Amino acid sequence: MNSSMNILIVILHYGETRQTTALHEQLLVQNSGHSQIKVLDNASPQPYAQAWQRTEQNLYWAGALDFSLNYAQQKGFSHLWFLNNDIYFLTNKNIIDYAGHRLRHIESQVGPVAIYSPAAKTNPYHPQMVFKPGGQFQIVRYVDGIAPLINVKFWTEAGLDFSDNPYGYGVDIWFSSQAHTFGFSCVVDHQVILRHRYHSSARKVEGFLEKAATAEQRYLQHRFGMNYQSIITKMAQDIHLFSTKDHYGTI
Image (cartoon, rainbow, N blue to C red):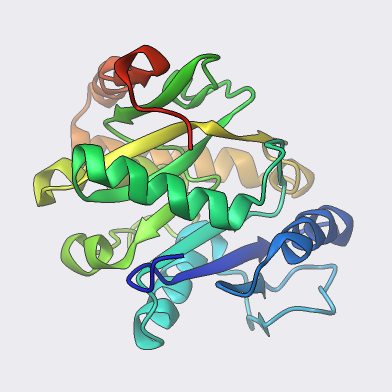
């Protein structure tokens, strides 16, 4: 992997240890030594024995991301790959090295990428994230926060705005939607595919999804306006898909 791209991988653990273990072991087996893989235990009711750190309280998604980005910056990493523990990669390659090669290849074609994301086998909320057979990659206006590979330089310029939304839902949309403002792109890669079990932990906490949804609505209204839903729908449709016929060959 290019020495200028130094990726820190953080798996966010909350909920059942078995799904964190499955992802952690998948990546450990594939790691060629170029990247550090850490598990952040977000004060989970089921502690993760191999965790790098365990927080004193639940930081939720955005707080845990902010914590991890600050650590990545302090330690000199160029990128943070922040992974939900309820995902699993379906691409039959060494995912860590392959994603790094793919990101460098894509940046050679479209310029600096703020956030790179694998495509999802299914995504009921964000259609631009869904895997397209025959697709190489696509430039999108925002990405879902299930597995963002974030350029630390972009974060240092854009910041992570979540002080009025502790639960973090919707922060991924606003954060990634700022990429174009700072001269970056957001990319979904159709050569790297994952499966995601949506709300696998959140739905087990009574009342959490309702509170998080209310906070998300206020948060997005404040930033996009009262018609935020139509704006986000239009952004999801604003894509530039590159396919094999465009000579962006699979690597």
